[in-house]
Image (cartoon, rainbow, N blue to C red; front, side, top):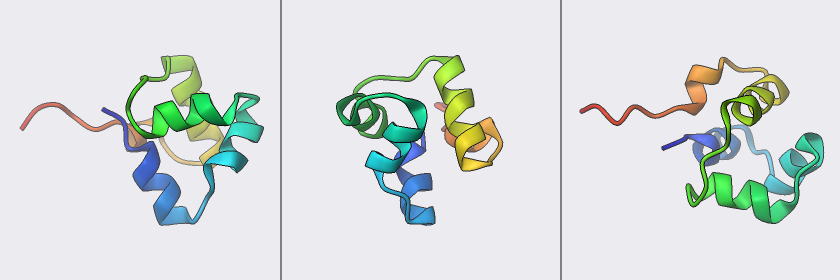
Length: 64
């Protein structure tokens, strides 16, 4: 699971803006945000760079 949706909401950033910065379609970014598709580590790193955060902030542990 990823935390992209939560981070975007916390920062007031729209998915369309992120899609444009990534060079991906809105539908692809939306599938990442809704956790229907998990981005590759390369894409996850690109998202972290764009958002200026540590990539670990975008990952949610499955361990409880």
